[in-house]
Image (cartoon, rainbow, N blue to C red; front, top):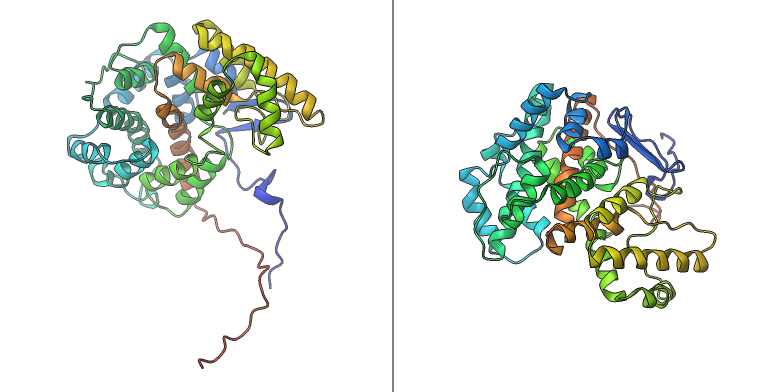
Length: 379
């Protein structure tokens, strides 16, 4: 019998595949998209630049950027034959990600998707762009119809982040709000083999289509330990209220064995590099919520250092994510769906890479149950 290999729980620090898309260096507090520092990209470039980089392997020149942006904008429209389904799903109870999965699971014929196994590289990339552009459009229509509002006519002159914000709120965003959301989205396109990305790659390895990949990844993202933290971090700010109450609140949560959402990270031991930039973005936006969040963050960090001196728990990307999304006008129930807007770009990029590898992901499990034997006779 083939000998099994013992690995850490959760596959921690186990390299399960090669990738050219990017990596997270947790000890150094650094992550990158292909050959570029991801935080630097978010500071200096546009969302479509990063998307082009992941899809094509290089940053676009200005002509390529305009062409790519136009292609994305054209694809950011809900097809007419999906519109009735979107309306039906929007009227049913449920969370936005569940509704998105319901719509996408029926979208294959409308999008003309085919199993990855049957497509060449260019076809895979074309379907990847179409699906990643469609996700924010579907989310926006689902949200607006679920609260009794009509869909917003897409504005193709807007970039991806601004177009999404416009389609959700119905208001053309200011340049400052659009840029704030864009920088958040750029920081969350990809982040190594996180739970949802790995889930998507497993499905892609079977040769399934990209809708199957994204639906599976969305299921993983729905878990509160992965994608649900931005709204929970903002819930914590609400529960704390004022900075003078933060220390007691943290002590109570720690004593109860609950996690402090927005602090600590499964990979980073150094500070989360995304958090520093998002704090700058929040400060640029300003306002009462931002001021309160900054003050409460300091109190939480001090209390966590006191209670857990041997375990660094710095602020992570989620703490200011919710603050920024609320500040630009997104409703709280759309925080995790907005995370999916950017991460879908990463998922489909990983799916295309996995499909090119042509290797089915099929790990083993170590059986630890009762000794196996013959089943007893009926009696």
